[in-house]
Image 1 (spheres, rainbow, N blue to C red):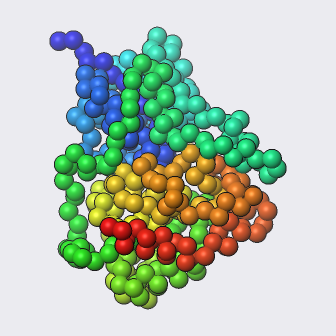
Image 2 (image 1 turned 180 degrees about the vertical axis):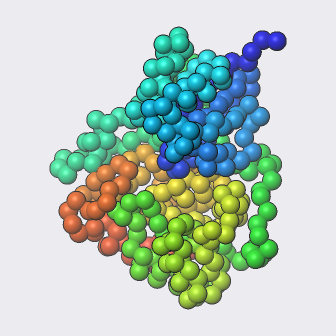
Image 3 (image 1 turned 60 degrees about the horizontal axis):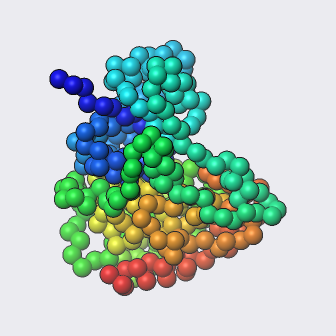
Length: 346
């Protein structure tokens, strides 16, 4: 029997970036069912690929164990060689992925790499004479890689649950939705400069709770769980979620929300995959950086667009000017009014 052609897609981190591959991967797989599409990513991220087309599978990269370090890279290459790869789409373009690319090029395989437009990104984030031309959304950058490999893909993905895929059931302690207005809030991000001040976000939670919204607080880790637990205790109809749901359950819950409030973070991209309307909050980064959630409207992106914004593409530990005005001057009432607009128009 003739072997089916196989495409390898590489994107091992971070969670939000891996989530952004899904609209491109699913659109590709549905248009080219004769191809096997194998995604190399970290094992925990495989849970993102709910209701994937039958020709999509995940190759788990154990970068903290079996595939760690140089010897681990050699083991990974041996594992990949067994997959009989025909073409490679490198959606990551980091040192490790470049070595994988080089291996497959030596094997005579066709390889294409994502173009990150680093020169244009530097112009966007410099302090003086910024070039604020919006960067291409990264989902479209991934599609561009596929085009250069010969796949004429149109990204028509709308939701993980759009094709009749069942939503994973939620725990019994989450009530039936009924006529309640449900809002998710994910107040954390990897970098401080992408995180809205917690005291302001708490004000938003209290305001929504007082108005009768049921609120679900997304986060992870001990520190985040402690903060969200305190908000849960202080506000009726508020649920802190850390440690209580699996990733598929989180996606299922997001698909039921009337609105999701998120930083420029993985939760924005997860909610976008679930088909939720996201009110995104922007500080050191802006939608012009190319990371707005797939299918989201920029009018729901809350950003002051100060002259110093954006100052980074992916986030930074501290404001380079020391004032952090992009977040501190952002009134929570702006978020509140946007949530009201979205939920009242349903």
